[in-house]
Amino acid sequence: MYLKIQKQIPNLFTLGNLTCGVLAILAIFNGEQETAVYLVILAAILDFFDGFLARLLKVSGELGKQLDSLADLVTFGVAPSFMLYASSEMINGYARYSFVLLAVFSAYRLAKFNIDTRQSTSFIGVPTPITGLACISWGMIDSDVKDFIFDQPWAFVVYCIVVSLLLISEIKMPSLKFKKGKSSQYTQHLILLVIGIVSLLFFGWLCIPIFYAAYVLSSILINFAPKR
Image (tube, rainbow, N blue to C red):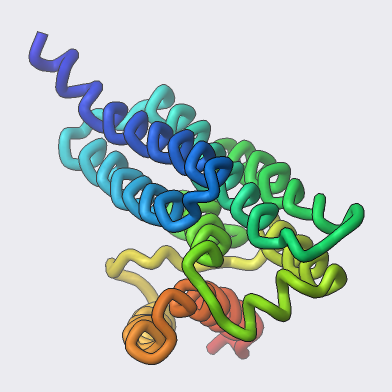
């Protein structure tokens, strides 16, 4: 009986992630964007601990893997896509519907991730949770950068296309966890840590999109750097 309960502990965290995602969507519909952002951040914490507990308790399995992807789709794919829609109210016409791309490509990426054996220790394409956090954070940001993206139809379309395509790109993205690996990864982690702290101190919530951009650009540079 105890073993059966133990196996479900990580799944409870995953379901908590999903619950936060559903509530975040409801909050966006109700105009409570700040609540939605905090719910997705809480979901990201739960998403971290479901994998951590699965490894700690040695109960990893196919059910947990599939459940995690389904939860991530709602929380880091669908909810942030609705945030993009809610934040682009100044845009008229079909351009505004570009928000759908994030949800669609998130679904494709998660399905691809589940069958891609190359992504056991690193990622191919930008992970869905990082993308989702970067997109949902716009609900808390008030800056010229946000005004430029969400007031200009072409800029909004380009933004949605870029973040969506990066999800399924073939760019190798290192895991953000500190573990044994190449020295370039340690360097990248330290640079990202510094960028994250500095941008948090000076730019507030804009630090999340800044961190996302730094993560993507540094990974691209590492991929194209000469191999020694």
